[in-house]
Amino acid sequence: MEIFWSTIAQYNEGTWWAQIIITLVGIILTILLYRKPTVWVKRSMKIYMVFLNSWISIVYYMIYCGTRSYNYILAIFWGIMALIWLWDLIANYTPFERNPKYKVLVGVLFAMPFLYPLFSWARGMEFPMMTSTVMPCSVAVFTIGLLLAFSRKVNLLVILFLCHWALIAFSKVYIYKIPEDLLLASATVPAIYLFFKNYFDQNLHKETKPSARFMNWFLIVICAIIGIFLSITLFHGLIENKV
Figure 1 (cartoon, rainbow, N blue to C red):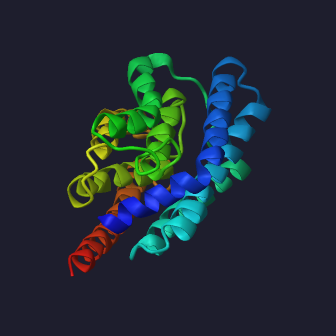
Figure 2: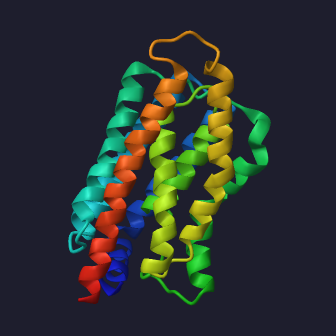
Figure 3: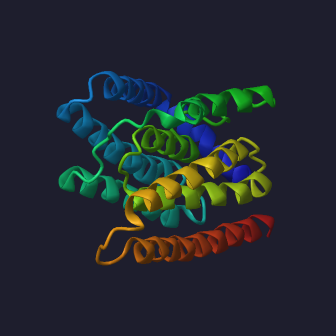
């Protein structure tokens, strides 16, 4: 646990200025996506998501979390996320079409990255040893909020990967004493239901090859396998820290 929080402190201390810029760019692109959803804005948001996930993979996990025993596995996880967004950018799969049905939940999810540091501060943590707006769980909850706000058609693979990350957050609450992660894990429960409901409503009765039901189970199995692998790695790291 000491290694975990020390790496967070080093990350925040070394990148606080970059995190401010990244956060501001995300806010600006989100506002533009709401008000002027042009092709350029939509592509820019996808480029931003490629960069954001690559940042978590390379800067956060590979550079600043290099002393953690499981950093390579998690770096690969977020690297895959970056590649998924890159594919989406090229294939133009996610059109970012506004869905106004879930305004309240989307507002809560968008607020979560800013609630993370406030929650840390409220429980006695101080900068730089505290959660911030450009960390894995903050990025995950922002992405879920973004896709729920524009959920006419979304990349289900991104959703399943992020929902799986939210489930892993439950273990981090107890292992590393991070109650902040309950924000992500709890807030995504209704989001999971809504994403799958939309997906099945749109595709369940269509004749597609492979079928929507098959793809749903296929993606769930993939994420379950990755989840088991990551959970084993996390607990292995816990045992090593105790030793």
